[in-house]
Length: 80
Image (cartoon, rainbow, N blue to C red; front, side):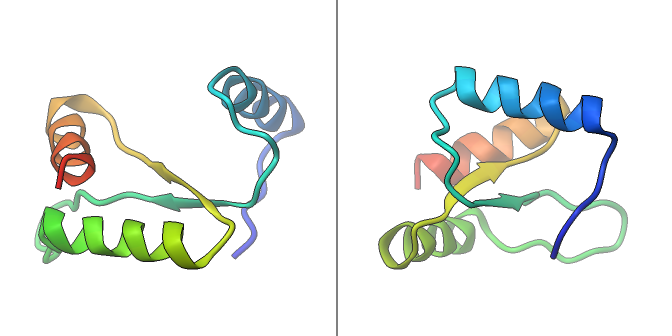
């Protein structure tokens, strides 16, 4: 899926990714937390998915979210 945004936003995000060590590889964004009534995968299932992507593709993965809840979920996934 292609996402479109303002050029200035894309430049800002690209600059930040480069600062974090991104070298232009294709990216997959994953937002593991849910809102309201959505059922969530367990952190272990997300960890399996991330490992599968890392082992079988050239994609880099970005976990997204904001706030303490999302940060906690992402940390749990990364340490699973």
